[in-house]
Image (cartoon, rainbow, N blue to C red; front, side, top):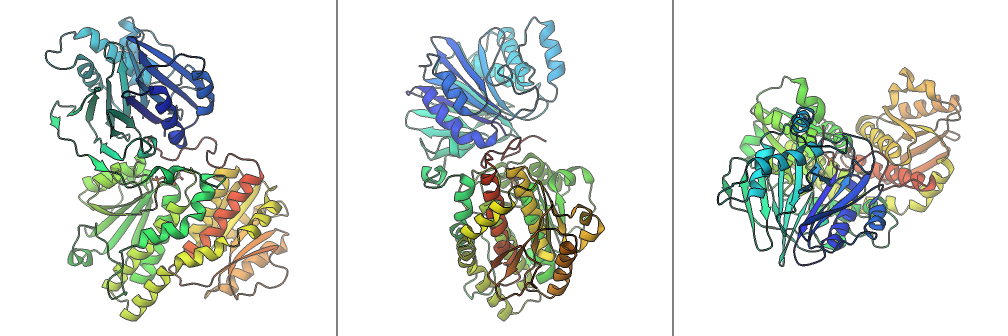
Length: 616
Ligand code: G6P
């Protein structure tokens, strides 16, 4: 949610900044802008729309300086206009600032600054902060042996309520950037005679794999030769430089048309990476290196709680089903945003899992902090190494699926399902699951990549189904038990990227409301795998057909759907119950992807959405 990038070095800053912005565009794409320091002056170019528009705008400016900052916006305060695009410049022209987050007390700040003669040209909260920095710079000209630039940013931030990842340049300080964070992500790339500030690794991976993850309340001061990190309370911080294992290839599209397509097809390999090294030597259970809990401590837990947002919340629902089904231990699932404020009563022996691909979703971070405040141990299930959620959790399980760039989550979701299935196994094997059943379960998990490959082979068929169904404006997704969350996920994917109104329901709930929607104009995607309640599923499809609703039935190999009930059938391999949700997800990912393509939608950057939601 808003991408920020800053550069100090020997190269022309604007080239590196624009490349970084293109890689960060998934974080927001309302407008974009860049500010470059040259000849003790700050030059700014900004434009509504995608980074492409900014590239054209930049061509009209002479931006040759080697220090600069750039931003891609997801609007919070103020409409999508050139004036509201970042960077924002203080009214005295001395500072330019880019910001990801929300300054909650900007109105009182702005009143104060107006009374001091500062002027404003945008409706944003950010402009108040850049002017407040300018105010402190003027007010305290003597900073002793400290940097006056750094000191004025630090002092201004002491007055901020809200969240921020910021980077600032000052016309009096060529070759310098001050950046700081509170709740919004920020990293520093340490390159060869250059430094890059960014919201995430993808923006700097083409220049360096050495990064410092800034913590909340820290400020970094970058000069051409060195960087220093201090806390808000002016303590020096010894930085830890981490080596990122991703390479730039992982962030390239290759031969695919969209990142979403690439990431769907990467799933067999991604799932192998999630499982690697995580089964016991006897092949009967899972093992996790990062839980920081002994088996004895784990065994004492009598309840698990899962929190997540969007797609990650659906993964939580599947984990709940599998843990309760196989381990017979109760599980609570909450939207992260609700858990923060709901004051849920829980037993003392509860372990929390915070599920988040990015590890930066502010609601999930808030839920994590609330659970920890209440004294619970919290584990992270997340994909981005070094993320805020990973760092603040007591332990966790990394997904290891590489960068996910498409805004609609695909490979990260199936990997979260895999982690959930492994946790269910781990808990079950500590309780009543036999060695033999454990071995069967592990075999099933190890077989998932091949099963997913089989489903992917059906892409041409699913594309044809998509062509037939792309014209509808409403769609239902129905499934039961572990496939109810997959029905929710199918509906979410479709509405996110194709703007078709879609709803997911437990299939038997259809008759309590959604059935009113069914007509020849509202198709249903129905999950009907071979299972104990197969006949009940067939009855529900019959009820749809009796009302002339078109149907796409997702079923397992060898399963007979009675004649006339399915307008289209998509077959998935018959599989173990624990892996069925993973295998059943793939057809609906492909279906929504191809429908969106058919409708000419911008699949990787759906309107109004952002991949990493770092505001409440
Ligand atoms: C946004 C994205 C979704 C994602 C959700 C949670 O809404 O558009 O695709 O599922 O955030 O993100 P997280 O990084 O916490 O998994």
